[in-house]
Length: 198
Image 1 (cartoon, helix red, strand yellow):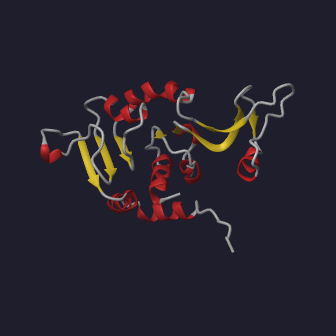
Image 2 (cartoon, helix red, strand yellow):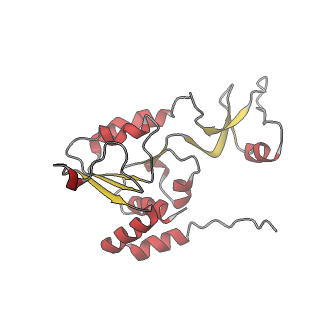
Image 3 (cartoon, one colour):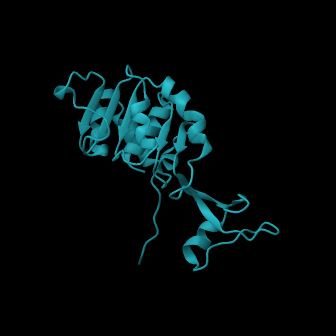
């Protein structure tokens, strides 16, 4: 996980995170330590797999998916359906959790932070437009996206755009908040050992 993922986990630890909606399927928010109750992985994740026919969970299919030419099959009696990672493919609906939580979260939001996105994939891209007009919105991104406006260009008083790389901006923000040491310490606990290719 990056420092940005660790920042989200830090917000969670400090009781400041209502919810983290992510379209990423890499599971880095979970690896960073964001409480599953605070996380909505809108397009799913690779941590688990399920049968597309009977929806039975399968826990050891990652190896079969990665290492074998044939896709894994369901082991449930009389099923034999294909097993796929619990990710959302094009044309599939989002997880029920997204719909169950979204509207309540929008009403309960007192600050919306959007980071590292093109805001082009609906319906998640529409979340910033859904928050109440009185809710401040912070965009940390390489470019201005969605319906965010730069403050100096308009009478806008709710949008804040901080251009640049997310990690660099998060480091600066944490310095201002006095959280820099906590951020680095938390991030250090999330490092995953990688296998050598030698």
